[in-house]
Image (cartoon, rainbow, N blue to C red; front, top):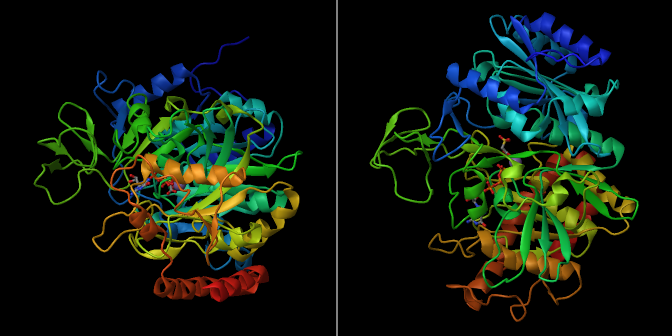
Length: 591
Ligand code: GTP
Ligand code: SPV
Ligand code: MN
């Protein structure tokens, strides 16, 4: 067999070759580099990135295999106003998406991409979303002029020849084009063409805008295909709870961006829960499909985590601290003089001096944050000390519970369980959450974020709710549905619930409910734990009164909440399933 040299093409797939030729003719790069995903290729590309100043090699004694990257200060998060769904007509995309006619958007983006890679290298990045051989897995190819994207995709996906092996001679793969251009907000578009399984992203080099397998393919294109093909693409973590007796329960949870998925997916149960174990299947995205046995099976399409750094420490998330201590790319954190990284909320002392995420000198007296609030780690899931073996299972795991949750300083109790599937769909559909730094603009404001999918559902949100209701018929043993809120505060702005590892108590209740092992009380919102049987033992600072406060259903708050829900329903009215309007009426009656 002939040995290929670095960057040489390694596929005979005619559809791939034709499309790459076409894009090369458009973008006019000086060079084309085909990635194969090997370890030696990665080493060479990391060296090249350091040489070009794209990455800084961190202190290899403290942080072996770790690198540092700063993005352009105008490009630090997803930009929802530049994200477009280019379905044939606007109606299909619905009122919660930006829409442009495909023809018009293709024209605009072809003009912007024409010759955009002159003097640059076009990297061909073949990748597989999902475990090899999984019936749910999908192949994508991202063409990019960003080495940072190549190196990140190598962590976040199963990248390289493995994707061509899965694809064989098929022409069904996601076509992704990414051109950095001049990283200018006015020339920034993240455009999706669901009917063509195509994504074009220009003018950014940050996370969810440019790692096209993640939000663009796995969620936006995925949601569109899922509706057509009878499955779910969801913004959910997936975890396994294992009891001391070895009984495993699989749980999926949808929390909006920067609202606790990564933390929940890899938490360590408090000492009180002796013998209980949490293992991670995924921390951000779940693809779920009914299996032959009537249960709903989930895979994690990703192979790495692009996680929020600030607040990560050995009490909030000890597993993450270990996970990101090697072979990790850090983006937009602070850099210390000895080439270590720092962020607000890190263990240990605050550095006397460092460079902030922009590269400016920072001291503890500085007014601004040293690390950007949306600074991130990119780390392979293999680094996770509690990675579940099932993360690589092509068949996925059977889900017993789905948890929805938002970031709410008031209104929402710590935990309740929906009465049934349609009620659960209503609970997910009406979710509200305070916006975070994960997207540009509006941080802190409460907005409706149905199923944590507002920025990611590529079709009419009303049709999405209909899809959720319809799927019930295909799932003989549907998961139970719950709602949580870790973020409720008292009048002193203190969190009522300690969160993080203590969330195990809530999770244990969820598991016990799914298995019919614990009683619940009926409330206006749904089933709630009785304070008699909910396990608060061994908690410092948590009293039954405080728990009652966290669980309180406050009439005034709910009057406001119902108005906010109605605003969403009005917006979606023409496509809104009547079942959800009925659920809202039932809730009003109960309240
Ligand atoms: P994306 O990657 O943006 O989708 O975010 P995510 O949902 O995975 O959120 P992540 O787990 O990274 O948490 C985001 C922020 O919420 C971090 O600053 C955490 O420290 C904080 N957080 C997570 N869990 C809890 C919790 O139980 N209680 C409190 N108070 N904060 C939490
Ligand atoms: C999110 O915003 O939900 C993320 C981060 O997971 S990004 O990949 O940038 O979208
Ligand atoms: Mn996310």
